[in-house]
Amino acid sequence: MATKTKKGEEKPIDIFKSRLVPDCKIMSPEEEKKLLEKYNITKQQLPRIRLTDPVAKALDAKLGNIIEFTRTSKTAGLSKFYRVVVGGISE
Amino acid sequence: MILPQSVEEQLKELKETLKLNKAQMEKLRKIAERQYEKALIEPGEAVGVVAAQSIGEPGTQLTLRTKWLAGATEMTVTQGLPRLIEIFDARREPSTPAMTIFLKPSYATSEQRVEEIALKILEITLDDIIKEIDVDLLRMRVEIELDPQKMKKFGIKEKKVHEIIYEEFKTAKITTGAYKINVKPKDEDIDIRKLYKLKVKLRAIHIGGIKGIKQVLPVKHGNNWIIKTSGTNLKEILKLPEVDIENTTTNDIFEVFSVLGIEAARNTIIEETINVLKNQGIEVDVRHIMLVADVMTNDGTIKGIGRYGVSGAKASVLARASFEVPLKHLFNAAVSAEVDDLRSVVENVMINQPVPVGTGLVNLKVEKKEDKKK
Image 1 (spheres, rainbow over the protein chains, first blue to last red):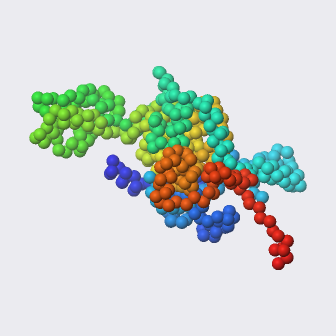
Image 2 (cartoon, rainbow over the protein chains, first blue to last red):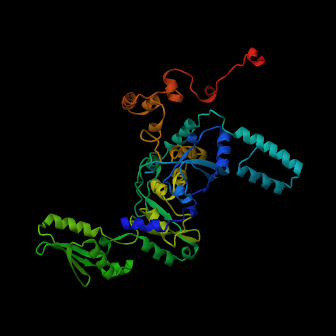
Image 3 (cartoon, rainbow over the protein chains, first blue to last red):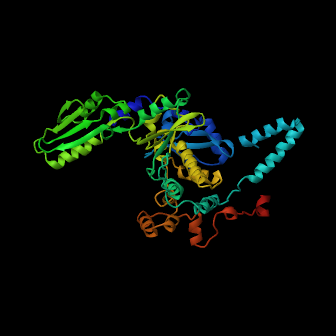
């Protein structure tokens, strides 16, 4: 199987096509500052996403970036959600 | 004030159907804003407890055991309480892994084509295409007789089977005839037990299809055909050109996490939970389930609700100790000299202090008049 997984890395799946993956983008430093000020929090208090996460990889995110997800919510239509990129194993 | 998108849409709809003018619209918006603000959860509300109750109470009405449907065409998938526990405990593998594969429109309408694809993805081992497999003790070898009919059904060529076996067993002497393969290990100290082991190994050799897909079933879904499978391999399935990536799902949450990421895993948790409850005729407000899913995926990995997951990750020693196996937590905390700030609920209950929930969350500061003058 080892050879097969290697093949997969050459031709990655377009994960953003899946309806399970919400629209997302990396926030600019200005946007980050605005966000943290709005909620009066530090980056460490945000929910996390691992650096090894397929979405973080696909966006080419760096440690400490904040990724903005635009979730399709059943109650609110669209809602924003933020995750900060952290290291560590994603298991 | 920013209203959520769904409310905005409703307002727009009202504006069109009732033909409201600008002033009326503004008035309506004001009312909507006020109502929205009223409907918001207040700060300090113990939403977790409410969610636990809201899922827990209907949970008592769920099927306690997995039903066994004899002779049903649909594949049996774990339902009811066992499945719910599986989801919330974040078990590595579901007891009945299953996928729902959607196909691109050009393939999905024709039953014949869908069946072709279904056969293509079905995992085929050597065991599926043989008539007989035997251990020849006299000549110390394993004899395989292939079944031409079965091979035709799965569209497998004899030559391909030979190639795979040659590739897998490079150290063995292999002789092939018409639909017959003999595998004889080359090492000298071969005994019967080793030979039987070889037989088992041979049967499980992967010949074709996608690993992990153990059953396939084309099902009519509206006008289109979809494929339901038992066994899952999201990564390989999504690579197929015929597959519609958008809608294809699996019930293995960890697989979704490793292929599509944490947000997709969250969505899968929500969907799977709603499905389990809906199948049993129970409706729980999505917001409770969303909260649970958010907590489970908060730190970027999937954590179960329990000692090894969410409860084990609490900051407070006393809170962790109050859940399960208290001594272990207290010992470990003592060894690493942990400090408990008593910021959360359980530990404050223990020491008989107001709990920081609801009105207990806010502190009052009195500004003295003299201070003001300064």
